Length: 75
Image 1 (cartoon, one colour):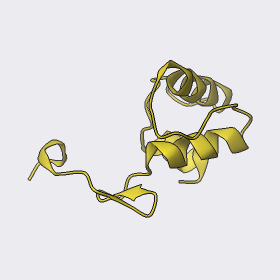
Image 2 (cartoon, one colour):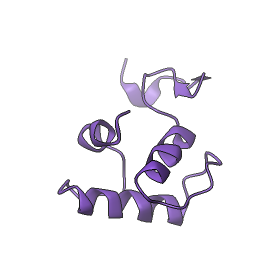
Image 3 (spheres, helix red, strand yellow):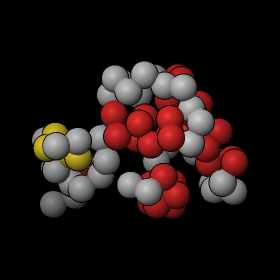
């Protein structure tokens, strides 16, 4: 079953697929200097914070949390 068609169920800060929740990502970005409200909403501030983090860590700048970004965030 493709991951895109799997239902997403949040459990203790992680979605069922094992990926970190948006709130977890926001909290991790804050530990690296971002000033985000960890509200679980992926808006322009969160995407910009992801891009800035990626740029600062010599990662592919996509604005999305890929495996490399997740690893760099410690998630």
